[in-house]
Length: 131
Length: 333
Image (cartoon, rainbow over all chains, first blue to last red; front, side):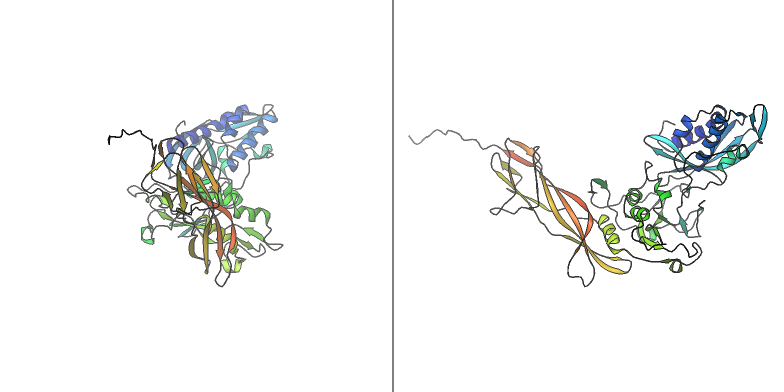
């Protein structure tokens, strides 16, 4: 992730993705937000949910994620974005409100296009979209 | 939500528009990872690197700066024959506009200078102010086109100027001509042509001409002050663009410099000169600031375009010698 090339971008993308359940469970959005580009719709949605869980004293459990880099594309020379295909496997997650289930997910496994850019010497996620 | 719109030959670069702002989420909206990704769309079209395809050679042209920003001068794109046709998932032509969404990405490291310039420049001014469009119309930034060349894209070229679009007419599937009333802004196009113009730096001459000079005596410098003219074609209209020298900064290479509008002249009519105070070696650097003008066919006078460009020229190294007076023994006695 310290590298400023495609490998560094891919490492940053996987780190960001695997941060997802931590952010949901703790409400600690600082690092996730710092790595979210202003144009990232996925990031905005995820941040809003993490804040809602935290602010309503709901509890996220499960939903652990593992990710695998499937494909690295050429860097886009118009925007400087590194596009990747990343396989994301997530365990089923549960969200509780005072012990009562308000959300029950299922294990999911999908391939996503992840776009990573670099801004002020740091990696930043520009978008995560379904393939 | 935008979608990546492409035909078999032309890809349009679009960008997502969802800002990171506080959204309200109710428990009904709770999702896992895939739910947050649902409905999002990618910003750029991705290409697999092609093995064995050498990158195109670096663009030639004089390096210059425009309004303080260093930029490589785009030259004409590579010949048509070097454009890869067909093959894999490759799209060979892509088109983009500096939309507010795409401009959100112009701050990324490695974003193309042309995208940054366009986002800071005319396209965005027009898009944001809308002052040049009729009421009820929407401004639309210039349309750029790039072609594939190996693993990268050619220098973006404007294929359609900024225009005003009537939003009442259906978009997308209608032919361009029916979709919009084109209002070609020639001054804006001329300003862009000036920005992209390759300007040959001023020719710099120094006297004495032999690569050496003397301490405390005038070393003369002068430049030719001919405008550089580019005859081009903007959307079917022949237009002449020219760069006119506006100011000269003479950096004498010893820590001193002079700036003025005078290009100087050769001895004995010289007006620009410098006396070095100590021996050594110096290189004179001339920075010429150029302003832009354009003229349409039949026009008597040139019209100014905004912006300035600079070029630099250098003399060969000059040896600064000291002339000493010597007492010579008179051997005639």
